[in-house]
Image (cartoon, rainbow, N blue to C red):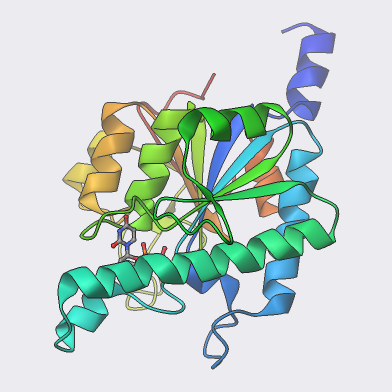
Length: 254
Ligand code: UDP
């Protein structure tokens, strides 16, 4: 590699278009009664702005688990379909919080929902979403896939395929994927890089199986990382080794 190329690889983002998957729990302080912490959301927004200023096209899929999860509702006797629609609406609340916070710091944002709620958001229209990204707007996808029995991880995998994202950055409360649950086994090792095949054979919990299959079948790499570590989104976009990378092979990504 020539000197100029080497310098570029250190200063240019590795990815041109990304999906950032934010779980609902990433928006609140653990153990707090508040579903959404304005301070946490502000921290995430400034990280997003930082990578967007590098010229990276940023689309975000938000979860809703900080407010409501359909499966939990159905375990308590609620109709699963209704409970899942409630979960999808919860993601819209999170999307609105994120949009407003990003706008306060000067970003141009479009919220698109898979369930139409015209008064507050655009409907999900793929071509329009791509156009927003090309024009430097941040696009937030809320209301999941619009269908019960799915998750927002599946939404992230689906939207990543649709918009041609080069990676899914999955922001969570933990700093990657471990060989065993680190809360139960404190000495469990964290993987820096696993292949899809290894993740399957070792039954590693990367995403739910529908989401994972969509990524594997369409060769979309996933980086699982700790949302609460500042600069992690920037580091992931720059190709620095954070969290766990799940991809086709253990060769470095192009
Ligand atoms: N959900 C759904 N269909 C989707 C996406 C989400 O029914 O396509 C519902 C489901 O009830 C889920 C809730 O929305 O529990 C919140 O999403 P998720 O659990 O994926 O949020 P996260 O764990 O990322 O916060």
